[in-house]
Length: 427
Image (cartoon, rainbow, N blue to C red; front, top):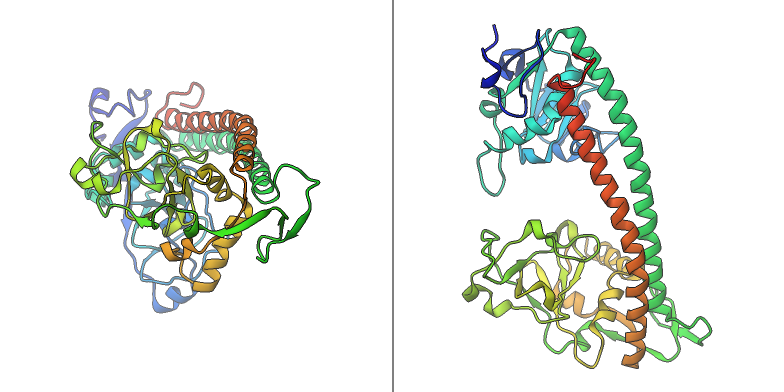
């Protein structure tokens, strides 16, 4: 007998179910498996962590999972793994082999009335993910335990209908995924074209016929003979400095914005949706000036840069960022564009090889060697060329990105509608 006696007891994302469907708590139709692997299985079975699973698609990011590195839970073919750490990431995997999963994944084993593939689609649906995310505990690393997950509704049609829905979604999501992949390939091509344009302009200039000379730097090659090479610390008007050691917990619009590198999108703009602020008394020692450059010093974004514009309002910067304030003798935008060049990223990678730690200190950034025209007017001409040319490429990039987002939204809506019986012919 269904726990939900009436359709109006169901949450909004499920809505009214078709006749013949029922909806129980997930825990009545799915068992949480907590079986531990033997010592031998721990060594030989492939290991999956939450980082190996793609958000919203359930694809494995690593085609050849490695043996287990830490204690975990054993899973088997047709189990469904659900990430309980930061569930809004929607990391769900329908197991195609036996293995060991990390402790941050719930291993769900469907009963004989639930098709595993149908269960996967319910768990990865936006309504389900939003529902468990709303009940998570922990502010910095929110988690959803089995008590939360097990008390979510599971829409349940007949087994034959589950098969029909799963087959439909397999086909449709594969088609949508193919379109998304083509558009992502185009985005990569646009990004490569953009970087190549920037790299040539900031290392060779705009005149292909000028005499060249060796820069004396292996990763840089030849530069125009009338240019010079300067270390970053010698073109700044103040020492490179670290930002405020504070938590991003406020979003008071009247306070200075608290800029973190994760606020910066692929086109170097600040995202509105990640806005955070600091109290003025905390921010006052870290306020940004127009054309200040911020550099990420650690983590997955190390090497990423951002140039501050006055139009973004009063702002300060986070402690894992380094501020470079370029002297008025130079055009700061030229240095920012150099930090978007291929040669710069080769330098970033070379620092990791030398130190084995993905961290770039203020001292190391200060010793970064940058080619530049001696004449500030030439710097400005190069900057104007880059910005005008990139504006066209960026417009194309945004259109393609918008279409990717719409396809992802369509895929998400399609899954939710299918698993809740809202698509005619599938019920």
